[in-house]
Image 1 (cartoon, rainbow, N blue to C red):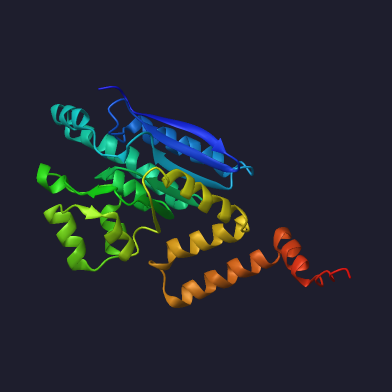
Image 2: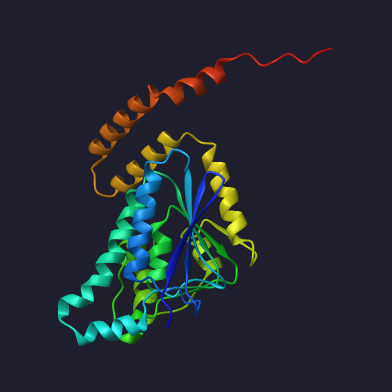
Length: 260
C-alpha cells in the first residue's frame, strides 16, 4: 500500500489540507499527523491564513486506522502501539488549540480515527451520502483521537454507547439532526460549501473568533465563576484591540444620504 500524504494549498485566505493515498482510504499515519501539526503551526503565525479546511482527496475523507500499521505494531513491544496514537492525539490537540476556525469537509467514507479527526474541527460539512462508521469494537479495538470525549459532551449516553459498542453506521442526516454536523450538501459540493463557510468566517474579526474558541474549549472544565472571569478578560482585551476600534468606528458613521 502506498503511503498517505498530506497536501497543502491555499484558496484565498484559507489553508486547504488534503489527505491523499493511492487506495483512497486516506489512513491517518504518523507522518500525515506530523505534517498536519507542522502546517497548523506555520499557519498560526501567518496573518494571511484566516481559516483552515481539512478534506480527503477523491471519494473519501479518511477510513482512519491503517491495517498494515496495526499488524506491524503487534509484532513489536507494547510501546510501539502507542506511536501512531500519540501522533494522532498531538494533531487532535493542535487542532483544538489552533486559534483560527478549522472546517472538516467530509465526502464518502469517514470512519474510526477519520471521524475523530472530523469531530476535532470547529465545523463539519458533509455530503448527504457520506458513510460514517465506528467499527473498532468489531476488530477488538477501542476508540482513539478523542472520539469518546467529543461524543460524551455532545450526545446522550445511550446514543454514544450504541454507536461505539455496536458499531452502527451513522447517516450524515442523523448527525445533522443531533448537531454533530453543521451542514449537508450534495455530493461533489462539499469543498465548495466548506470554502464558502470559510469565506464568511474570514469576514469576522480573527481575534474574536480565537477568544470564542478558547472560551468554548475551556467551558466544560471550569465553574461558572471561572468562566465569567475568563469572559470578562477576553471581552476587555478584545474591546481594546485595534481592529475592534476600527469596526466600532465604522458602525458609528452616519449612513450616506441618497442623491436626489
